[in-house]
Image 1: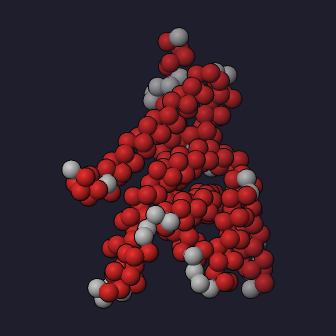
Image 2: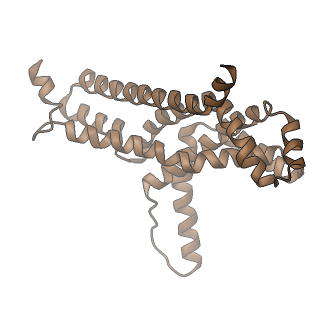
Image 3: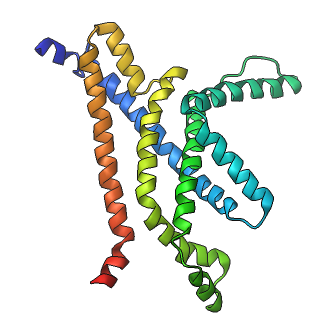
Length: 239
């Protein structure tokens, strides 16, 4: 037992450092998708509500494609597709040669698109909770459309959308394990390497399981704090 636990040490011969680095890569990848995927999802939701037909069509196609495709297939298409497209463009410009796309960037783009597609549905549902009269009241007060959305509508949307977005975040966190297929050294990749070297699958897969559960627990705590923050005015009104 002690010999097995020594495999998790941070000393020479232990896999502790490698697993920690892999866990940080997993967390960094998931966090990097939020600033891109969350506003993009909101933009897709706004496009779906637009009066312009081509915007609604574009939003429908985007949501259907990236919600319908398996996340692994999206990842592979983005990773290999971007490399092939860049190679063709450079070849046409007279710069032949092999093009390699950074695996972290490719994974970030792929998962951000998936996150945006699923979060757009959450945003659309949240829009249904905002009374149309609030837009009319803001117009009477002389507020611009942008100011109305930023100060009146968006806080209400966020409060309503947070539970659904928390589920999307957890799905994103779990989907990051797929990046081992394109050789990005994340937690699952490091775990698989450790298992192949040490022949101790239960030890390292249990550690990986505990790491993901820890991430989920911390995420749940963060979203709980956010929900309390956005519900503070509602609680004060009720009291």
